Image (tube, rainbow, N blue to C red):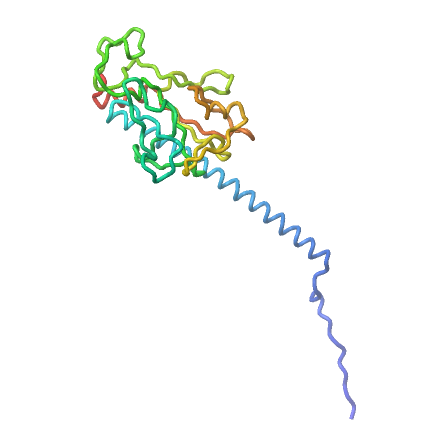
Amino acid sequence: MTTTRFAPVRVAGVGGFSLVEMAVVLVVFALLLGGLLMVTTTQLATQRIQETNRLLEQARQGLIAFAAVHGRLPCPAQPDLASGTAGAGVERTPTATGCTGGARGVLPWASLGLPETDAWGRRFTYRVSPLFSRTVMARPASQFGCTPPPTSPPSQSAFALCSPGDNEVRSAAAGPALVSNAPAVVISHGANGRGAFLTSGAQMLLSADVDEIENHDNDPIFVDRTPTSTYDDLVQWIPSPLLMHSVLAAGRLP
């Protein structure tokens, strides 16, 4: 009996990948993954900036609403208190000349009913002019910082229509002023967080950038500029006309 033998059939393209082919696949995969991560990181950074700008605008509106009700801007909150402890987020006590503890601290989120932190989880720095944050009382016309003094000194507002703020926002530490006489300024210290206070009450490392230094030191000069590799702060301020209009509409200014 004759046995028929069949030759094995070879199917083209079924063989395994070579080491070179595998290396190429891995390189392509790594490039795709790296590009995806870069896009995701960029999108997240953009979203945090947008969210923080929204929170800064919300803070500005909250401060103006507070002034319309109370006839003054709130004092800063003590920055080094941990969240949940007594007094955290509550404005420090106003006096006849300004705020107990000074004009600078963190935004009094609890007093304003606002979120505590920016999109990076850090508290907002806040500085308010003493003329705008002192207690409301009847004062002589000469005590409102106006030249000439107001003819009808207000008794339901800490400030008059002509009262100047003492905060200045510049385009650089040694640059020209973008805004002068602002009643209050609110700062987010951005992604790097230099100089910001955490919810624990601890302060992050201070910046070495001359422009960022202006936003966490103790003077009334601030910087709002295009971001760089060392500067990423976000700055908001209260324009005097906007504040005056709101307090006037509330019937607290003559």
